[in-house]
Length: 427
Length: 181
Image 1: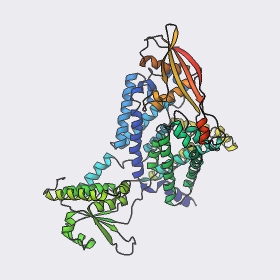
Image 2: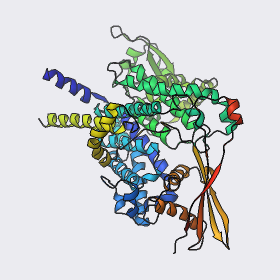
Image 3: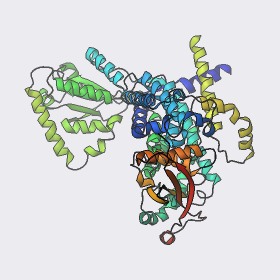
Image 4: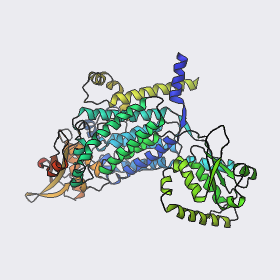
């Protein structure tokens, strides 16, 4: 019994998952917090120094006096406060870019806490969630994905071995804490709505859209949307209630995807219709941390490229950076044996003219994989649909008119490639 | 052995953190017996941890009631025996990158004005002395102009909203002076 419980706990808290989601969340945290704090440039000393609106001797009467952690209780003069603020911006920039990501994230989060605790009168909902995200990033064992640090390590590894580093992984417990935080956020928000009258009577969004400060709509436009406001009111509560489903174990993966999609619609609508500060962007930041990328995908995609061409090698290196699922198998067209095994019908002349990509046409593990080959722009377009990082641009590449332009551009670059005789040429 | 101890510590911490986040976030307005018991016995247990780690949170955004009061602030100066208007502060008075923090500051320090936060409210208004370059000891008067969107009990039609007009009220909040140099 104890063994069973121990094993279950170990699996629940420590099974390895991809660290890509938390890496993305780290980058977004630095970006969003950095942008919103940059907006305070002209007001820093007013908000956070003793020369401003809230001197430290007034703090205890207006904010809690116990369990307060803030460097700004000791740094109170305008000039040092301003330089501490500049340090916060630098730390957030390094967090976003992934320059010394661990130190930058810890420094930016602790400084963020200090600024928040110093003056709570200007905090909005997004600031609370930023603190929650920063705390989890400090605790997470691996936040190096999508960082310059990792990009440098990838390049060094590639130069030596022509392969990329394996997908970064982390134990699942930080993800569990983030998911729990979001479930609590939405379910308690729903609870608050159920306590009051406007939300349960379908009038809350009608009221909010007429608020002269929050609503981006002029009164005439807001009035036209009144009929839609009522179903939006109830739908938003139903969607918040759905987060309860994420507590159910072994649910299908599409459940969370659809709930997150609903969140994008919900918070995206708020962002478009209302001026409510940073909350929508911070929520999207948290959603990035909830993305669980599979560690591997057995459906291999073959990329045939010219290993003697510097531009080609750099291009496939970049493709591999986007290959989070490790699906790409790179084959140098000059490796005759490998090439003939995979693409016996393609000639050297054809392969020299453009990069070729083979998409598997059967996914059964028991039978040999057959490939459908595409070349040039069409190959890149097919790849974009299969690599998670490029999926966002894939629909754009199918817009009518894009393909002819793409093929011409690709052919132009490929012709220039053939004029280069040394390995380092780029065009 | 060390790895097992570390794993046990992580499990214990995770369970504790999840417990604290849930308990601290429970709506303070909930009146069911479980919520009242939790507020009495569990919230005090979790509060020190949530405060120390800056994880305090309540998700009452636009709920239970969305904010219905819309306020503009007018600052006047006393000059040659009469009050003269200096500036009206409404959402469009501030550049978009300053709106939210300035508005929140006004709501918390000025609009929610009482004896406790009057010193802060005065300091907020005295910022006008700097921006308008007013001489020291100039008397300043803050006036609210506000409307309250009606508490409608059932959804209203577009036609109803087309006819509705906000009713504005004005109220003098306090008088203060620009600080000496």
